[in-house]
Image (cartoon, rainbow, N blue to C red; front, side, top):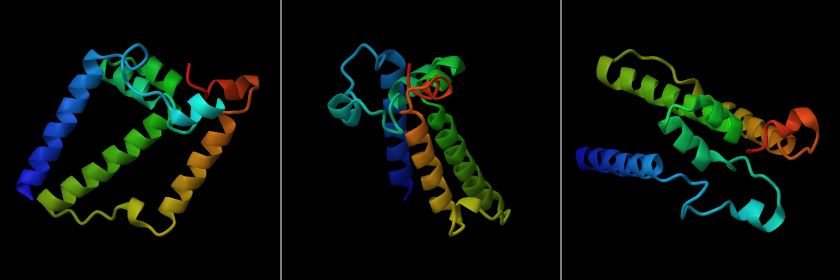
Length: 130
């Protein structure tokens, strides 16, 4: 378990370093296959650029590339924080992500975001990656 955690941290750091130094907009990173083939933005379109912007503390760029990225990141931070507190401090905090309706709610939010970001009218075009 200890080596698995260390390995995952190492891989995560290497990915962060890679995205810090190489801008996905202009380098060798793969493009979204759905957008490339159909012209439709998937819920993840712009996430690579948003991650690059986040590493450079460009929050306006993060929001401009993928607003859902911040939502997913906040869920990840919440989950890791609750697990950390429960594991090391025995807090007994209930993780709301383990509620039986949480995955359905998250899926519905992702689908709504996916639909709205592909509507070519003004307020919705703000959700499309720029």
